[in-house]
Image 1 (cartoon, rainbow, N blue to C red):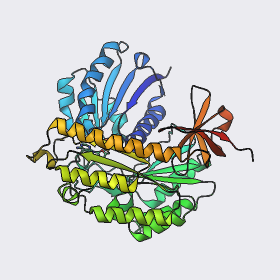
Image 2: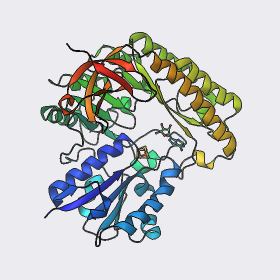
Image 3: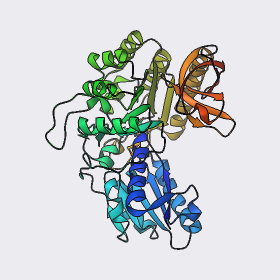
Image 4: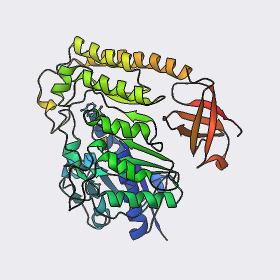
Length: 434
Ligand code: 5AD
Ligand code: SF4
């Protein structure tokens, strides 16, 4: 009888894909099947994120709860970015943990499983050409890694220390993977990397030079593939060539993630982001002028060390001018192993909370204005998720989440949908009969 695996995934899309790789390896080589119930699992895995401190603190309380409620003899493993940065420390603090597997060591899952108290967290381990077995949690949309690691040195960010240096995956492997996914029914591929538009700078073996723009062109030639998405691009590398490809390639979904982080050029410098407020605004303007209907999402950090009221005003200013369709905003969280954690001019927590709430309130009202404008509009929706309330949900090319009344037969299909009720997160629509 096969054993049961419970896996909890925190963090970004990269982690979602890492979990799929772990599941694939364990299903094929170790005969595990998935369960949603940790209490009946023989193996409990937490795939962790360490980008901010909160989820790291939560990890140990969660581990305790899993340990208390687990089935007799069940094992617990910690994977992902926190595994990379805390390593052995995890087993010291939670001795019932069986193994620790770093974000750049996913292919070693079969190995650590059979070594008690194994810790594999090498950040220069190269998995860029490892042939992972196949598992996808959605048959409709395929996540595909195009690079591992990150070469940027943003001073707030722990990721280069958990995922190591950036190595691109050879284009040929990416295209083959995308082709296989499309043959098995996926109509959308989601290309993943910490810094996708920097693709092709370094491979681990000898491979022809390919830029991200060329990669997009190659992927879009795949017959039967309807939509291409990617995350995350870096505003610094949004050159004209890339924006032109984005604008003119019909298969590329017209939504761009542009992580601003701060609207203040001084702070962008302290963060080592490599661009100015003006460059960012110029890129958004170019994008909006070339791509009608494009949506732009962003990430913002408030209260980075040394952020003055004027710096914060600059961030509000960019938010007001750009009117992002989606914003993920966070209070700065000092992370070990990062340059900014050594800075001395931390912002008072109350000021940080106030700034975050000011920004979020402004964003909410911008969003209300944007979503109200969706009423009566028609979007082409790719349906991919059955909701428990009798609705089926999907996204427009521009990444607007839309749900309609319906059932399974809509899944994996495209329909034109007219919006009949708007809200901040999910729009309600009805299918327009062809
Ligand atoms: N503190 C707060 N937010 C952070 N992010 C990355 N590092 C930190 C940090 N130390 C945010 C950035 C990034 C997103 C994934 O998380 O906005 O784009
Ligand atoms: Fe993803 Fe970064 Fe979190 Fe790692 S630390 S899971 S790369 S968001």
